[in-house]
Amino acid sequence: MFGRYDLKPAARRLLSEISPWLDSGLETFVFTRLRWLRIRTHPQVVLLGRRVDFLIGDRRVLQIDGGHHVGAQREDDIAHDALLRLHGYTVIRVGCFQVTDRWPEVQDLLLRAIAQGLHLA
Image (cartoon, rainbow, N blue to C red; front, top):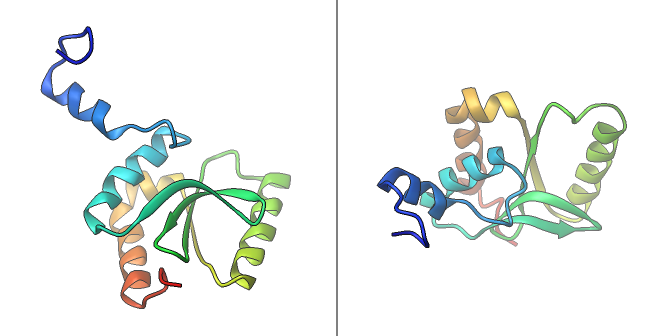
């Protein structure tokens, strides 16, 4: 039993992977795929006045854009990315399609950044 419900193993595993701190299903997908790195990964951290999707280590920011990141939202995101860079953060920004359909490329970008120590203070 999981609470009051008799859930199958796949459903119990899925429930163990979700978090109220993740802002979307897409972020849950990314968070579960980053667990094996064994590097401190915090979702929805406020940096310089705005939330970022993920802070990996001390200085790596991963931002995931959905389809609504256009117009004024996109301009605000670009400005915040620049501010983060000026304060020593390294930002990787990817789109929804990259996460869902081209995950190996995203993972490769993250691993290369980590190999270069860009996640460290």
